[in-house]
Image 1: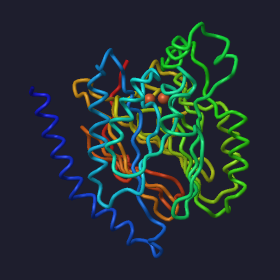
Image 2: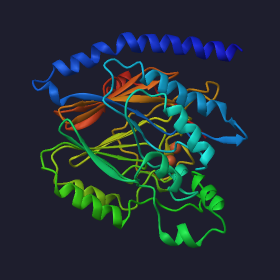
Image 3: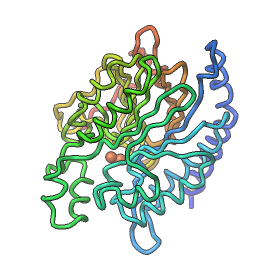
Image 4: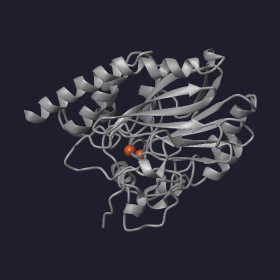
Length: 358
Ligand SMILES: [Fe+2]
Ligand SMILES: [Fe+2]
């Protein structure tokens, strides 16, 4: 009972602050540019991992994380132009999970678009997901920005079609984050060809924003914080002046710049993953510019989870992280340095020293 009361109080507190607080910074951003018609906001919710127990029972904590993101997104002022859901809506890709997740998301005001996650995909290879949410990859234009959604979590046909006795087994193998039986994610040739043709119609100075589930860069292979053909996808995006890639899957804040491409991750509503280097000192390539979050405190079920709203300001993305149990974070594109950076903690002296875990 206490926990419920505490969460409710926190929600009312946060929701109130959002409703009052969000008007000001958004207006300021719009005023900062001469052509404010190009500036707009969209919301991004990701990695809900809705998990079916049995009958009409689902894991309550994951439900609550998503319900809260939906409620808070609906309070944004001004209203976001659209909402993205970044994948891993379900835990094991089943119909009850996808249906239940879709039902929770149906409370969102405005248009919702989806990205495929591996937890949504590997039971029926996206068949039911497509019925609910549409194609697995597509593009759209909005206020002068070209948006692209890719399914980046596909893998080799041999692994997908020949290795497992049942679809359930295949799903379980890919759902385990550090399971050595998993297989590297990839966009694949078919989608890369589609992407090439799609981009051929776009002017080189049009801002391009790509949504994927896994990072379209190679960070840590052991947990599939990695896309096998990332370099080839990056090469297709290279001719464009302003490119941003926004990805889920990692359940933590990451950001960096590779050439003309800004990379930003989003948080999960379900649970946080630690940074790879805290796990057995494993070899990884987390970009050096990332300001680490401290590892989540297991005594607070909503620690290091949340959702985000994104200002599209002159073709660059500024991510505003709304974290349920932590101070908000802003990762903003620095036009002078030409890279995204933490607006609050970039200065070493302002950082909280990370804890060491063994
Ligand atoms: Fe996830
Ligand atoms: Fe994922």
